Length: 443
Image (cartoon, rainbow, N blue to C red):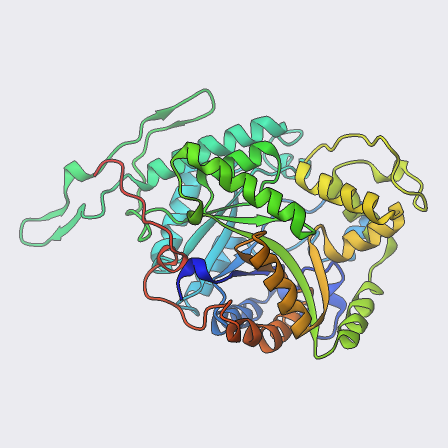
């Protein structure tokens, strides 16, 4: 099956699951944040099911929020450092892509280039970089700054970092390494290249002290929904994790971003857009609804308020919990995409702040569905055939339970319909996703 004729699927792993109360569910691994065997198990499950990639999000601080809220959620406070974990998972998998998050605000370009080049070699060509710009002021305070960089600056910085990292990945031509014992020459001097990058923000000499990655460049993943985020995606992204809640807004985003790619000389088929989908799947709609309601009942009210505030980047405490959002609203101090999606939903459904808080705590800004396997598969197929996506980022509400349910119940239906791969193609992650291998700029 050609890569562009089927859905591409990412398995998104928060420690105990996407739902904020996931750790309280009996089918979740409560100590996941310190349990590498848990991650090995779920990585193998995703690979056996033939997911294209597994996706590790990351944060660089303990969330700054009311202590009553953060003390009730593992996602607020804890998780393995992604490169350490992905290197371990590379030893227990052989096919599935490995997506790791690295902030362009709080990492030096050389660090990013070196880590992902190493992971690509360790995994034999399966690494992917989730490019994030970091909106959290708490993260900034761990790196000597009072607050996150301003929105426009973050994206300018991100674009520059991606360009530097790609330049460093080209430090060595693919055939530079002679390793000729007889002559005593380890590499060809003319095939090592120094970047010598200088700007107002960065000065990076190079070369990188890791050989060129097997993929040329690890796959570039991104998630921005604002205009600068869309522009960065059009220029660089090969996979997008998007936040859209209905297929109409998802299609608008899909058409817009892919429509921008031509000015960068890029083929729209070389970008896969995978909206997040958090699925409660059971044999029947009634059983799935019951499971959803049970997990929702585990959310503490304070957690709902804090999550909604952090996602919309506004002060929720100023509004009456039992009233609808006022009009006009203050603008966000962070992600425009999340803010607009959540406000649009609140207006459309006429939800109060309290109701939105409960919804946000369960879905955390991503699309949630609960139902039978047929219903979930139909929903995914509808979006795909509508042209709203190239597949989905599956965000199991609790893990391993919901991942197991999706793999057991939904994946076989998608495979029977020809919508999901049944085997991995040969080659690197790029090869399997139908992406070209970048030429070395110096070759």
